[in-house]
Image 1 (cartoon, helix red, strand yellow):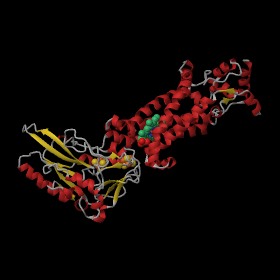
Image 2 (cartoon, rainbow over the protein chains, first blue to last red):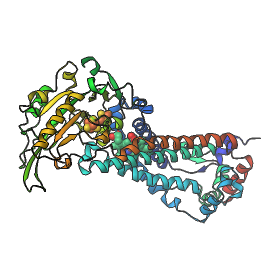
Image 3 (tube, rainbow over the protein chains, first blue to last red):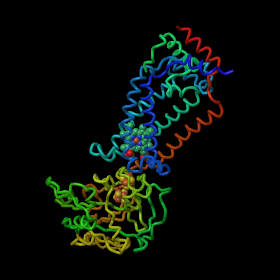
Image 4 (cartoon, protein in one colour):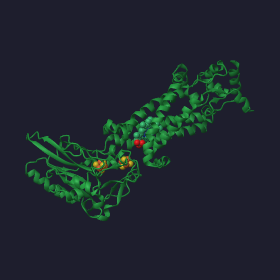
Length: 221
Length: 302
Ligand code: HEM
Ligand code: SF4
Ligand code: SF4
């Protein structure tokens, strides 16, 4: 028999502050808009996506500006979460047992802090890719930066930008899939809390640490 | 020639890119032949281009060279480039003048790079033209072009370059520049006519001691519909950096080729892997036992 919702809510564990969630959603929306406006130019099959942005010219003009928003918004997430994303021995252990991870046999894995190795890889992967995307993006942002580079540098930047975008979108797919597969995760970003059972199952070490804190302390990040 | 001229055979960002076949070379494809050995650098062609296309160039500044303006712009689709060149063989100083502008490549890099369907078209007579209604101003054509030709307008953020006077050619006229040239350094006609004319000119130049005179019609881009007669066809770079063997940059080929397929494959595989994983493994759910254990830890700490 399922546990009734009131009980679940009563014991819910706070995971993200309102600030962190707003920060996350600005980042998420910018990334999706960037992927859509970028992919529209990536291949003619997807050129129709420009309609979402009011046509080809405006999609082209908006894309880099959304990139600037993404960059600063992601920087916010980075500084919020970086200290929680340092690699440790549990992560190496977790990675060695990646087979159990994909099979959902979490009882065979070490107890984890706030983030598992997969989440940390998403964090670091996105951090590197976004820095590289804005760097290559600026080189091909001709309206303002045309005079800074020559055509050959722009060609390389364009090629890199396309590949980096493929990388970022792929990580995004993995990130979103993981949030869907592991039920009960999405509410961390919609409501800010998770059930005690979710925390016990996936991030037990973190749950133990949270349990030690006085009840009225909101999460830092 | 007139009716065949306006048939589109290729357009940018369209499946395969090819929507028709180029007209037979001999009769229907056009060439503008620029004979550098006859050019006196008077810039009548530059004026005629501005005039016919109703363009105005800003008043510039003199930096001590004859090139005016200093580079192609969205308004100056053609530009006389002047080079003072020391001929190593004869030890003499030569003044080389080349009318720069779109070469109307048979294999146009601009068209290959353009992401906007129909913004760049190639007509069956070989003319490559930009369609400004469809152009989104991304500047990809600049990266695709091996001759550094297109320019983005600061006024409307669209790409401009020589049209080979497609509007004149389609009604049986020659380009405005060719009409204005006082020395007949610019000729216009079918490929066969122009190659014949070039052969005569080259034979003449050779007889006058220009051993390396020749026709610049670079095979790396499938040949061009603007060709030069050069006195030093072995050193085209001497003419203000005309490339020796122009071709679409391999970086651009990689970007517009393998990257697209590999990119879709990688993103698609990630999505499919997710679907398959979910189908096989089912959702990763929190059990009631997890909830009770979790509650115990959470409340136990108090
Ligand atoms: C972070 C700052 C970013 C900047 C400054 C930037 C800038 C640009 C620029 C200038 C272009 C050329 C088209 C245009 O002018 O709009 C472009 C293309 C593109 N961008 Fe970005 N971008 C950024 C981030 C991203 C991100 C995060 C993604 C993917 C999620 C992305 C995906 C793409 C794609 C797929 C293209 C088309 C590439 C192609 O045509 O092959 N960009 N970007
Ligand atoms: S600037 Fe215009 S013509 Fe040039 S590639 Fe972009 S859409 Fe095509
Ligand atoms: S010279 Fe450049 S702009 Fe002209 S057809 Fe060739 S690639 Fe296109």
